[in-house]
Length: 270
Length: 329
Image (cartoon, rainbow over all chains, first blue to last red; front, side, top):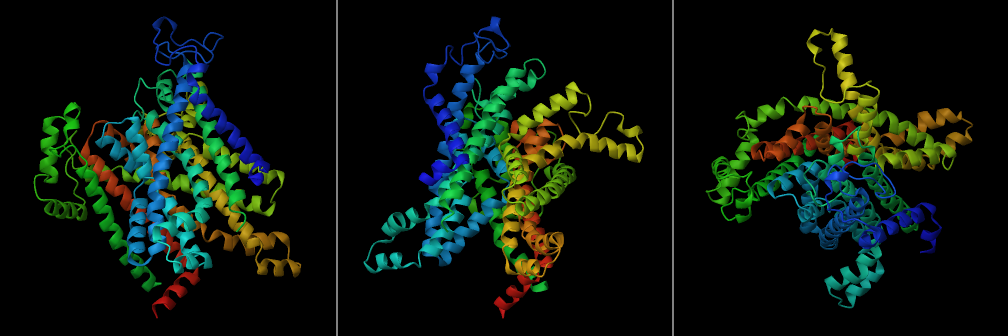
């Protein structure tokens, strides 16, 4: 922990993330306007004291929409990666621990999933269901677990020959307990790194999908779909284009920095 | 070498079967299923579409028969006809593959040309100002939402400066240009998409190159070369670079699915008539035969990319085929 606090990149990443999380959780306290309040008379106003970041083409306060958009981005990031971690750890642990044919089958499955360009698979699934924030979370989750499965498998393969695992086995500890209590805690480092970077990737994916009109659907605000609207006001309302992009960029950068910092500190021991 | 290729080709079979299974699963999530009530609320999927899907994929037949038919279709590259214009899906995809592949090869080439020097010099001058500046540059590219950067640059170079065209592959007067004029016209149209995709895709390869080079520089033979008093540049570029460069081939292969997938965003922003745009339009109009066709062909292209990378690696590094042959004997 001390090492992480000394790592400048990791600290700056964490500061960005914590600030974003506070902003998202306490959203109503920061906003003077509701994100969905339409005021046609006030459309496309530039940033001012009244509307900190200006208003959009329907006269909605951009600052409020951005703050509520942070909620969407962060929850998509966390939940989809949480899902990916659960699926990935499940398959990775089983493949690594049991080996043999189970391992071969699971790893071939991972290879196959990796053959599909991720965005194609996600869009195909989105086309089959109606796009909504829940579908987006699930779809990103089920297409992002392969890296984690591979990592955990590799870690477990090397850990399971170690004495403490053999000792636990000799004591008659059940497989589930060995995996959950002895193997996973010792292999968690790379997974935390991967998951942190995964949140960044998921936020980018969500905003990309929403930008294409296939992610979070209006009127719910998300950084991606504000940018979709900004496409039509390009050259008229710079604030619509600049702020959401900067928000995505800074958030993603925050997770990437934290991820790199964790990689340096958690994995340097080996 | 030949045994390696054969083995590698045999390994493709389970992957192909897997691709067919997963895409089959995706079809089964489709609204053709009579039990899927939720799609009755969806106006885009009319009763007619449902019936056509049922007929196309034989959704009223037993599951195994359906899967058998799907396999046959995949083997013949027959994905049915588009719901929109009734043209065979394969034909529609085939005329667009060259565009997407060209753009991806161009951006892969650009990534390679930029990432190798960045990584090598960062490693040689580890911890220097250059190293840190490059780390920041690469990180910025990595965190940048591609579509946002595209939007900004389109506005700047296209709308404000009028230097570059903002959409499509060719100008209206394209037909009247000379050969070189045509080439220049393509270059002007593709400049932004290729540069942006290279910039945002740079991080992985350049970081990888840096790590590799650092690893190689710590090897004994580099120390020997230094001890011999060999010229520094000769050590870095003749001895170290060659060895650090080899594994990069694999990474290039692995980045294929990301690039192909990313083409959806690029091509729809810049209105480039490639496979990504076709897919995007298909998704927007719920043109299921097109969606399925592109999904499967995208996976084939990825497989092909990985295969080529593996073969290139094998050709470049004899250790691979020797260890492989040893395993067999």
